[in-house]
Length: 186
Image 1: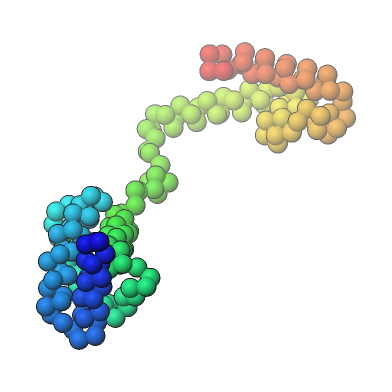
Image 2: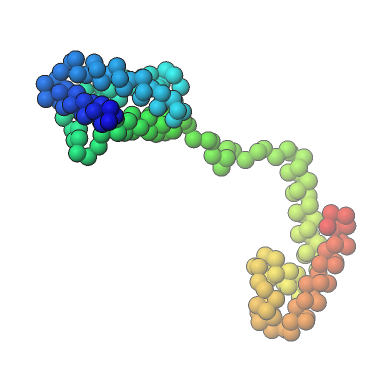
């Protein structure tokens, strides 16, 4: 019963603030709700200083928006705590937007390759080109189609007009010759 009377009196205090800017009514609301709103915000993760500031902002919003309060839609406490919750959400959104995004790894320049690694790769590529050039024409053509043009065996069969078994044989022979020519690099 006392809770209902308290809610009715809180609603009456808000309406007094709305209609006549009653400072005494606002002082009564402030003294009753400020500590409760602060505790509410601390339970929601705000530190003491932030909770204190948000509690003051909440009650300032009550002062400014008292004319928007409708006792048929919500109790005074529900309306005040909804304002506090919304202010807390706004603060969280602002801080989330203020945090810089993690750097994008694709923005970093590629790592520099040591000169000796470039030289070794260039020598290997030259040896591979020479080994492919030394292959019989039909084997080097099969390699080109399979590995450089990325054709399937059946596409190679059609392009070369030879049986599938012959395509596979040429590739197998070419790979064996390349391994032998390149030695331990293969």
